[in-house]
Structure formats: structure tokens, C-alpha cells
Image (cartoon, rainbow, N blue to C red; front, side):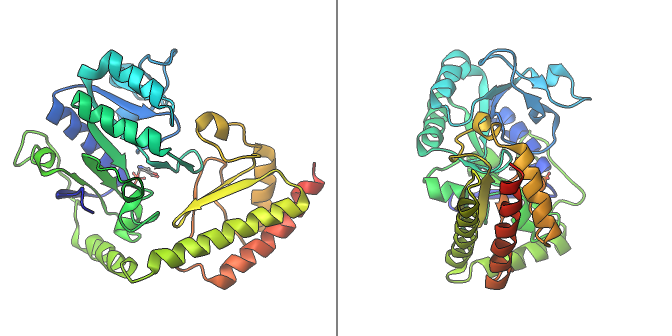
Length: 327
Ligand SMILES: Cc1ncc(COP(=O)(O)O)c(C=O)c1O
């Protein structure tokens, strides 16, 4: 990954996010951070925050046990809204340490950032001296070998990894520009450490996974399987007249009980939860375990062969028929 000149291994995506934020604050000497509604970056205090009372007011804790004095530095903005981001920089630019984002959001179902939004973010961070943190915990090694950043042609200052990087074992990482990474202890003043960070068994498993996924044609096959799945699901819904849309990038997909693809959190919130719940249980009864929430993205892996995809589509035909009858 060309944007990663130095990397630090940790054990979870949460740690990667918490440390990346600390590093951005240490590097810039600023406190405020910007995150987006519907994006999730782990359960560290400053990131468990919901939007404040106005568009450009600072956030409130979204979990018990998080002091408001911690989240008062976190500004929560609308995803895919470059104008609002620009307004925030105009108002607070000199105090903003970083913007943290999922370039393809996967924690409000799947919502890809628009290229306009992602590039505005890069430009504004550069202009105001803030760091851009792209959270690739979910998208890394999943939407493409070099992550979502390669699809947008954007170079983050810091990138976070988790999930695939450990091949099922507890490995995560954050890395980026050398000038920034050198601020971490012991070279620099930003403290970070962990007993289990980079533990050899987990890293061996992660490295074995990274070798396998570099095989020629791996991502073409993965994307083709995922496309086959969502095309089949959409066709099955259409036959039964169920309002449904779907999309995928690489091995990541979104299924929506909506007439069209969502562009942000507010759209996803309009999904038909009752229909989703019925569909989910009808699929489960037929042996297909989808993510149990309207707000989760789905993943296809290399283990999902043609038989698995065809069986899933066959189950969906029956499940959509049940959903259609229930209306
Ligand atoms: C985009 C993103 N960032 C960070 C995290 C947190 O990672 P972990 O659960 O390993 O702490 C998650 C977890 O789902 C995630 O999806």
C-alpha cells in the first residue's frame, strides 16, 4: 500500500482508531476531530459520539460511561456532504487535528463515499493542516488489494486496518506517512504500546492470508462472485415485487429494503425494518445467515463457491415470496 511508509501493529480496530486519533492530535497539536454520522471506528471514548444539537455543534456521548468533556472535541457531520465539511473547516479549521472516515462506509449498511466528498476531504485537510485518517478496518484487503483508497486515488496521512489483515486472528494496524508515524514512541512523544501488539502467532496467520489474496485474479473472482450474488438477489426480489436494491464493491455488498441506493445515514434510516426482519429469519430458516441488522454490510469470501451463491439465491427466492405475501 503506497501510502504506508511506516506501520504499527496493534490487536484490534478499536486500538488502531484510538491510537491514530492520538497520533493526529500529537502531530498537529490540536484537539478537535471530525467524524461522520453512520461511520464506526471502534469503541474508544472520543469516537462514541452522536451529532450535537445543530449541524456544526460538537457531539454528545452515544454510550453511558463516556464523559461529555471527551466528546466535546468531536464534530459529527453528514456523510457525503462536502459543503458541510467545508463550512466546518471555515469555522474551526485551525483547531482541527484530523478527519476520520470510512471511504466506503460499512456500518450504516454499505454506503460508498462519492469521489467528490472524498477528494474534498483530502483537499480541505491539506489546506488547513489537518490529517486525513481513512479507516480501512472493513474495506482493507476486501474492496481491493490496496483498499478503498486505491479505488478513489486518494492518499491518506494515516490508514487503519483490522479484520482481514489478521486472517481471523487479533491483528490490526495503523500506518502512514513517515513524518507522522515518527511521532510515535519511542521515536516521538505520542505514547502507544500493547503486550499483545504484533504477537507472532496472529501475525503469521495474517501474513499467510495476505500472501493468498495476492494471487493473480483473486479480486476479479471475488468481485464476480459478489456481483453474481447481488444480481441474483435483486432479480429474486423483482420477481416477487418486493422493493429492494443492492450494490457491491469487490467482496463487500449492501442489501437495502429501499427503492434506490442510499447516499447517507438518513437514507438508510428509511429502510423497511419489518420486511428486513422477516427476510432475515426466512433466510436463516433456510440455512443462510445474513448479518442480523439493516445497518450491516455483507461480505463474500473466497470460500463462497458457485454452489453457495446459487443456494443463497434459491433461498432468497422463497424468502422474498414470503415477504411479498406478508404485505
Ligand atoms: C470500520 C471499522 N473501524 C473500526 C472497527 C473496530 O474494530 P474492532 O472491532 O476490531 O475493535 C470496526 C469494527 O467493526 C469497523 O468496522
